[in-house]
Image 1: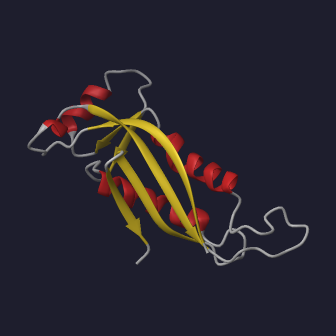
Image 2: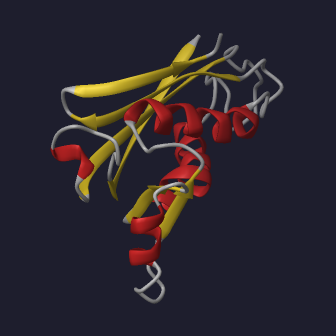
Length: 147
């Protein structure tokens, strides 16, 4: 069985080597969809009876490990020294320093790597993160999937 939970967050970024406008500082209203696979729990008296995982728990874990960390942050590549130096001039600025350029593809892959162990077999029902879809805009997204 597959289940999916969608969450949204706002963040800024730039793509330093981009040939067009994305090389400038800008932001997006991102959406992240977390798709989990697992067996439906069939245990009378269990709060998750009839579910793969309670959607509120899917949300809580995604918020704790990714969404709240990236929400209203500027996501910057560690090699983008000019922007890193600029952001350091703002006290207490929320900055997410990444080891990759913050494209939709790289953000999806990074979020998948972060969340994969978080959801793994949480309920003893062979639970797995199957796919993570990250929308950069309503019309553009990247999917990170289990190989």
